[in-house]
Image (cartoon, rainbow, N blue to C red; front, side, top):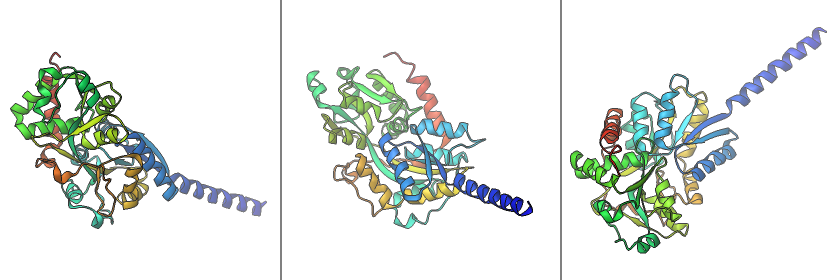
Length: 341
């Protein structure tokens, strides 16, 4: 009986140890890129490591709000993708943790600069320029001129033909708001947003939704990151991509480990893996046309050529700060969104 008890106790201890190990091998993954890319990243990491991934896809603004709401009891481990501004804000608010990956020496300078500006609490994983796309068939059917500049979108003939996301939920739309303020100055930037508002047919939750609607023929012009418009064009939809003549802002899509992550070691493994050229090359499988941060990763020939686009000197530190984001969003809520259309 004594031997049986000892054997049973040993078995229970071994079982408990194996169960504990099994429970440790999991990751809760918050993703703010396009759905098919998020799914591919989750499943590919599972295949590469055997770690079980629970993935949730939401826009950048929504994910930031969720991480903030969960801060007293974090449920997520790593946040990958979406515009860099909310990642910087999360770092400023202490919602994400410092981590220096051994992969850093393979990254472009702009990706490392993103990390350094946040005390190494985030890092750049891709970049992409803001712009818009339009459905050329709908444009012709409505006898509308081809837009080439931001200010073209204010013309009265485009009333009801323009769509963008809500900057409260979408990182793309917040980048648009912050870009207009930087291109035109704050007063004229908000005049632009008010004029644009009168031509908007819908504010979507997701940043890429306006150009998807244009691809389907449900909307004429969508303000998005240019790589999202390229995806629609490459998929065979009659979408033309525009780099606005005045110049434009851009994003540094980012990745952060959530402070207090329950599966911190697994989050670090994902972080390092996601910075590898192999992981970044997965973008090509889902027609994601951003410029990857790893110097050895491949950039699609269809991707917008950043060197040929008039990019502004986007102030990530200022517009990625929590106070500035709150101030601009409140001003947009109070002065733009309430206007009649």
